[in-house]
Every structure is written in C-alpha cells, then in structure tokens.
Length: 212
Image (cartoon, rainbow, N blue to C red; front, top):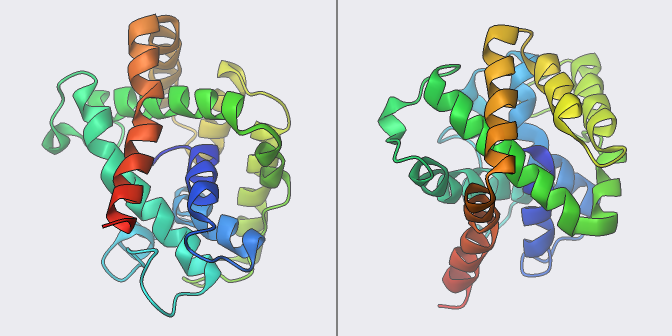
C-alpha cells in the first residue's frame, strides 16, 4: 500500500475527471482498502478481483471510485518502488526484508506528499466510512478513522509513522526496521528524489490513459 495521505492526494488529483459529487465518501473509499490491517478482512476482499479496479468504470458510487483509485495507484506505483533497489515483486512477502524496504519507501513518499498537499491534509481529520463493504465492525472502522487523525494532525515524523504502523501491527520486530529504512532513505538525497518522482510519474501515466 501507499500510505493514506498519498492515496488521498491521488484521489484528489483525479476528482474532477471522475466527476465526483460526494468528496468525503470518495476520500473514504480511497483509504478503505487498508482498513483490512485492523479489521482482519482478507486482502482478496479489499484488493482482489471482486473489488472495483477501474475508477473510470461506469456506474460506480463515489466511494467505489475512491476505492478503485487506491488499487490503481497500488498497481502503477509498485514497479517504481521495486526499482528503487532492484527488487522483484516475487521477492516480497508480508513482513519480510523486501516488504520492510518497500514500506519504508512508501512512508518517505507520504512524508513528501504531506509537504505538497497543503490544506488537503485536513481531510484526514474528517474521514468516516458511509458503507462497510465487507460488513466490518463499526467500532473497528471508527478506530481506523481515528488513527488517520492522529497521524496527520500535524506534519508527521518518524515517531508518528511508527505509532501508526504499530496500530496496524504490534510486531516491533517488523515495524522498527521499516522506520530505520525510512530514516536512511529520507536522509539519502538521491533516493529521496527518486521516491519523490514516483507520484508524478504515476499520475502522468493515468492522465495519458484518460487522454488517449
């Protein structure tokens, strides 16, 4: 997953072309898939073939359009993340060293997104979930909303991202290396610039699709 503010940034940049009417439902959809980390829903139900994959498909609700922007960014962004250190997608498994590195790159990307989105970051304070597509527990989804507010109430640093990740997974043996990688990548100017280039590259790909 890209981090949540990056997904909202992407959704925001596609909002007009997707003719979104209910912005908050749309933004909720954009971060919904990663609620699986605390809801325990199988990834196939939030990211798999039964999920809305194409935000430009007809007859999607605004929530579903947002959901589909999330999956679109995941698909298009992943090759760029893996190219940062010549990893192959086949090498990644939940929590392993490749996953830790890729997750750290996504945190750096999100830190850079925060610096660029301005007032849009305040959207994260107000996201709630108008629908629960997989019958998620209401209390769990409220908790997922709350940790977004906690993370983005001010410009987040490494400690805030660490706390966020620990809300999703309390395994410090996995999360601590993610944060260590994040610091190393952010402090490396060349790597930081490569990561910063991922978002505009993905957005350009999508806009080229739209304009064909």
